[in-house]
Length: 297
Image 1: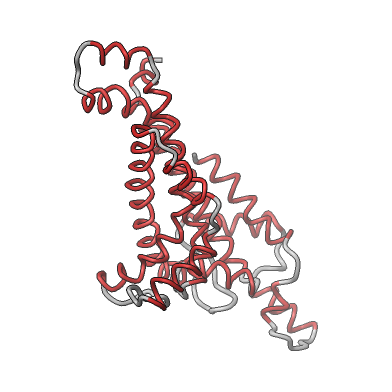
Image 2: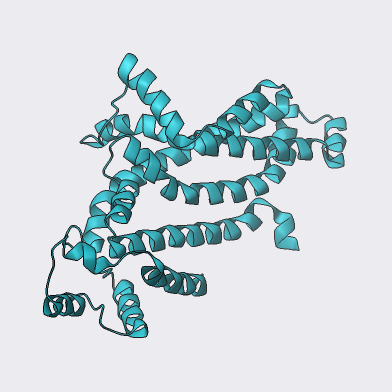
């Protein structure tokens, strides 16, 4: 995990030199400074240092919680991201609950009932982009019915949670459909196993068979896919937060890219990668606890 983060940090920092445009051009804001002034700006922000020196300074500062200064907001990157992180974490947390509860629940229901309704629902849900879902939800439940607010993040936990309902639903529709599909397929595969027929023939109740011999064995692929999708929520918030006017990390990423605020972009990208790495590591550690066959192997 540490090696992955180290390699990723190098790639993320190198993107500054691969991206089009010059950050100095944004810093001067359209003015025509003299060569001496340009040299002073480059020296102030460290652009005159060699690449290895700049990377080492950035890496060591990052390990101490110093991600640099925002070009746009003239504040530390850590404070800028920290002020917006709580709303994004609340959105991701609520979305995670919806994905796990409804995604796994619908998958189990579809496998046990073996009807076509869940398949159709999953197919439609997987094909709906988050920005399309955001527009429809805002129009129907926000404007016409007036059940939920459509802009902002609210104040206080209850009000914030009320503001997060529509963004969370828009964010999770596609992810929920994918988890449902994987859960249903995994459950159907386990239901066809020989040992399930054996324990059923011995007279065990259907609920016991499903709980002890089907669901637990089917959870492996579900947990793996859910971990990957939940990690991707942090990236997907960019579209949803922009659509609902939220001041979160996702909308901050969009504005930072528009304004070539490289320190903020680098910090957010590294945060996303770190989330992927940590969540996948946790999934690898949990997997043997779910499936004893992995531990025995």
